[in-house]
Structures are given as C-alpha cells and as structure tokens.
Amino acid sequence: MEKTPIYFMPGLAASPKIFENLAFDLDRYTLHYLNWIAPQSSEEDIGSYACRLSAQIKEKNPVLIGVSFGGIIVQELASYVNPKKVIILSSVKHHDELPKRFKIAKLTKIYKVFPTKVIENFEDYLGFFIGKGLKKRADLYKKYLSIRSKEYLQWSIASIIKWQQAIPIKNIVHIHGTNDAIFPIKNIKNTIQVKGGTHIMVLTKAKKISKIIDTVLTC
Image (cartoon, rainbow, N blue to C red; front, side):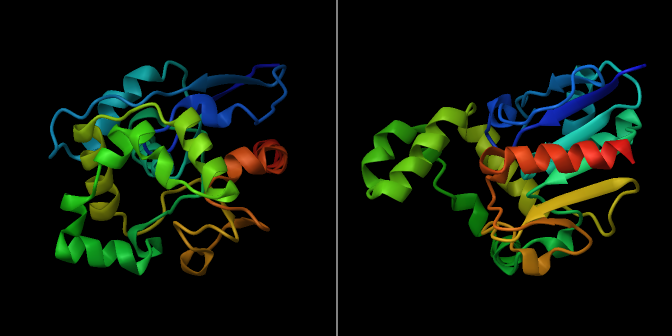
C-alpha cells in the first residue's frame, strides 16, 4: 500500500516539536515537518512566502496540516503543491473568522508596535510568569519557541492581521477547540469541535486530534 505523505506546519514562531505528541500509523503515512524560513522583507506577500516555503515539500499530492498561523500558511501552500487535503488546527479559514480585536488592530495599525522583545528575550521575562498555571505555560513557550527574530515576528503578526481570504479553499478540514482564546469558537463555522480544547490543544489533546485526523484521512 502506498503511504500518504503528511507535512506539518507549526504555529507562529514555534518549532515542529509541537507535533511530538501526535501518533500515526507509520505503515500508512510518512511524516514530514516544515520549518519557518526568514521573510525576504517586512513587506513580503504571504503568497510569495508560501511559494518559497513550498520548496521543502518533495512529494506529490501531500496532506498539509497546520496549527494557528501555520494553518493559514498551509492554505497558502495549497496554491503551489496541489494537496490531497488541507487540515487546520486552532486556526481560521477566512478573514471573517478572525476575532474583532484583529480587525481593530488592522484598522489602527497598532500591530506595528507589538512588543516583540517579549519573545526575542523570553528568558528575561520569565519572572513575570507568577503562579503555577502561568509558570507552566511559560515553560511550554520556552520549550516550543524556535524563532525569535524581530523581523520574522513583525512580518508574521502583520501577515495574520492583513490576511485576505474571502472564502474557504476547497478540500479543507478545520479542527477547533471550544475553549480557544486566540480564535474564539463563536467566530468559527463548519469545524470539527474538540470539547475543552484550547489554542494549544495539539499538545494537550494530541490523542484525540490524532484520531480525528486519521478518521478524516480514512474516509
């Protein structure tokens, strides 16, 4: 039986390690992990970025899976690699699913002054994560953040806020947590809901998500 290639795209500034808890039948799938590349400039179009990133994809008709901003990127990649299916987790399918605060940020351009130094020098800010819950979250960010470049971060934030996708692309499956605070479920339509899933459910509900993906790809 020919194996189905799956390419995984992590979320903003994250490394492919965020997928380490997912489990798939390696007799049926080959797993590949995409890495962020540096934008050519702060003004690079997201489509141009996806075109350059597509060089990392070697197989024909792959399944593309992306988390959060990575979910937006795999939708852009679909224009260049003719995927068998696109699966997004904790993400959005078109700009109307972005929360109101993102739209306000676009209008006011406040995203241009986002304090990227918090991520660039994350260890220096760990002292502000007081309390058991916040400390645990800080430890997760420290483990899974892979890119801290100011240029990359500013480009990424601007690309999310300015993203223009009027309607969902064809052959897309959306898996979303009911407790996602970044992209609230109230704005999301036509999705497979994961009860209690947060924006980092790829880590915390990996077993359930693995099963959902396998079912989607089996049908």
